[in-house]
Amino acid sequence: MAGKLEVTIEMIIHATEDTKKILDSFEEFFGIQEKEFSKSNLTGHFENPITILNAKITKKKAEKFLEILTSNLPEYQLDEVKDDLENRIQNSKLYLRLGKQDMILGSLSLQEKDAIKLKIFTPIYKKKDTLKNYVELLKISNN
Image 1 (cartoon, helix red, strand yellow):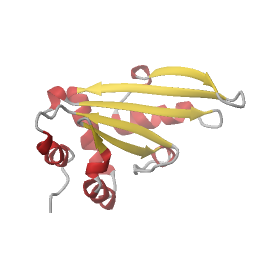
Image 2 (cartoon, rainbow, N blue to C red):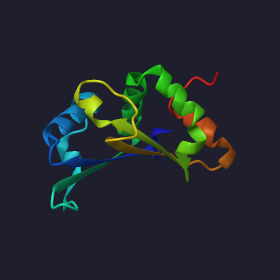
Image 3 (cartoon, one colour):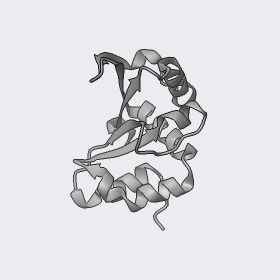
């Protein structure tokens, strides 16, 4: 399944945050280097600088990313993902949000606020197989 697997990473970095710390955390956890991210500098509503970082990883690198992600997330959060999978999938894409500050502090967790957006894509040809495929892909127990 690695041949068609894709993970898109997107995050918003505010002026008060250290871009280097965030990028260093990505390299430490996932082996994704700074040069793999595209960077857009924007100006916020109150003239505050905002940086948007994007990266897309594919194939074996995406598979390795998911292995690291699922092995480092708390088990209760993987259970929550499994229970809420139908609401997290749209058009064969699984949407997750990773805690930015937790990652900087050395742990991975799913969070809704101040998050790194993850979009995981693998082609699914039969809609009825969508949940099963993502359970298998994330190696979530199907008990």
